[in-house]
Image: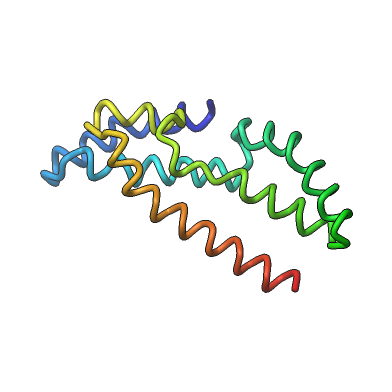
Length: 132
């Protein structure tokens, strides 16, 4: 919920920028929402990823031990991957900007698909670079 409050503080600013520049608010709200989500992910403020971690890390560690791999790599991959919440339009920040921006689910899927693919590519490359 901390991300929702931070995003709500920026809504009047985005509204003024939109009015001054003539850009539609929908063009400014989507990047602001992604930045808020990314900021919360980096600081691990969001609680949803932490709940998933409590459920999935023990499973990932058991799988790693079963196949003879490093459990730390499996746990770290799960920890980073659970913070990927770009594609789901039900996130609190996205719900806050959906109405004023005039976004639909298709808009989020289109914009979020790119962010999700980029996130997963960076995750896989980084894991291979640091743990291979």
